[in-house]
Image (cartoon, rainbow, N blue to C red; front, side, top):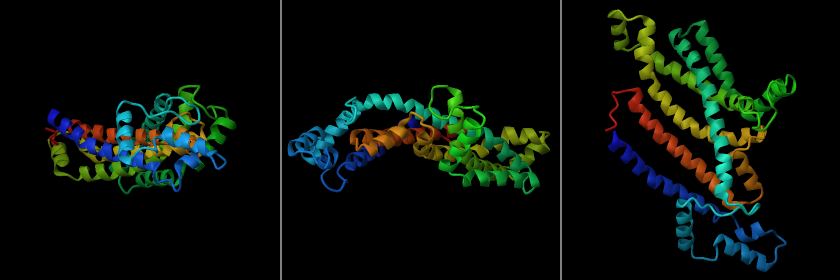
Length: 307
């Protein structure tokens, strides 16, 4: 187990450096002179020179890259052009809100998807299955930029059960944005659980367990469901990245003070150190979640050897 963890961690290092390189290249892919764009069209030549020096663009490319990587490893993302605050401080303030929203959406998805997926698999091709698949189809078909405002109108304006925006009211503030993001994921997970569990229910070991005296419920929940979770974990890990990127839209809709909203603001203000840091943190979080999902495989299914 420990060897597997070390091996997977070492595999993450070149991926992380690849992301670092792409993020570093971001400012060099901008058409024209980034310093002139940041300083503004009416900037004086000395202002442009000052911006270029602040960004390190007056140095050779390899020097810029080594400097950038060494600073990032130390947790130094530079200073914001707009606020002159340390970018790492702003990231630290916003990051917990985005993670809270992502896990809240995942919780909503699991609460909805597990019962629907299991029932659909057990009563496959029945009217119950058809109803569950219909709701799953609706969930996939509702984009967050449409569904979010609809929830605000229904539950924050018309009934005032939840706040319209912000994060000040704790769990009540989390409900609407989490549901906005979570229902689409719930639809995907419902279909995955249904297909995976239905396939496991046709396996010989389930029939054998029932023949040896196990109840159908015990055969399903103790044996089949555990094996059916393997592809579900994979989908969850992959979809977590979608939750992080989807949070960009949802955070804008609900004025949620997270990393996605900060990224949009930074792009609008051409605050490139902030943009680079936000993209890097989101990407590294996605890599770490996939690493943790690999470790969960051995916990869910002992047939998978991690050593």
